[in-house]
Length: 386
Image 1 (cartoon, rainbow, N blue to C red):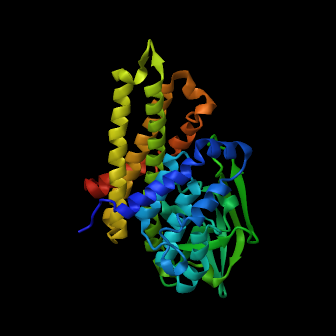
Image 2 (cartoon, helix red, strand yellow):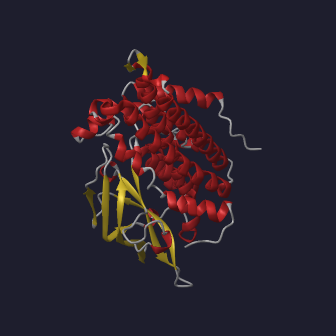
Image 3 (cartoon, rainbow, N blue to C red):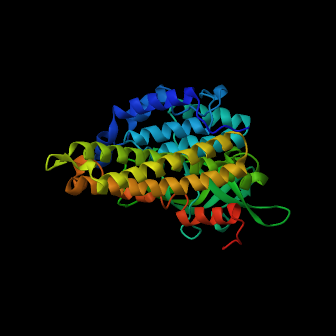
């Protein structure tokens, strides 16, 4: 029977990661963003401590843990004020897909660098006209001898300027039926014909968003991850970890904002009384605490089911967790600003910078509406709406 209760080992991991993240905190994170710098120092320390590779198999230099261990790392860094978006993408999505679907040679080539922190990978699925519909992806790959030729574009892809490769979701033509099917390719960011351009957003983060363009990008045969005829299954193997990581980062951000609000409400006095003594302040924070804890439990359930190999049940729990965590995080940051009053808009408190970042959690990596579509269809057995 699958247990959703975390082990003492994972609780110890959480404590250690939070301690590391707290030595940096939101002041470090937002200062790096303001200077156009990266979180290189924190990334390096987390890698040296083994946190980045905690879910990478031991034979490839990792900790041999499961996705729940990496989710704990993501959550605790966010709780400390350092929500590292590339952690969600690089070891979680790309690392999981390669570990589960890659060949032995591909695992030996691409996984050890994730464990040491020397390698960073981006993940390219979203396209301007496809949205959340992977069946409408127009990025195509065709064979040319033993090579592949890739053409197409992607948008809102995170951290490409830090990545050595992008795991790109494209489509190939079935030689027997002529139908297009998903396929996954590891594309070097320096490949001829591959260009990327930054997208200007209101996000305050060291990790940027990019549009990608593939113009006859030639790739060797072994750039194809796993089997050509199993692309959809391989893609879905990375989507559960993606949602679990997004939920973990959102709950971590919610815990960070709630902690700041509670600290301020306990210290700020009006007419010699801490404002936290007033139910108008206390009750909204208490309600958010309940919602955050519920989202955390859903996330832990999703991670446990994924680790147990029950991918369909994990998908249901992961979508619910991602939805619940995003809602809780948005409410937590908003209420923390409200609790601080005018100080909530002062950059020194770090809350106003989090507004756009946390709002993103309702949109990506899957919108709240698409998560609800999944729940309506698979949990409630309602007719499909799209």
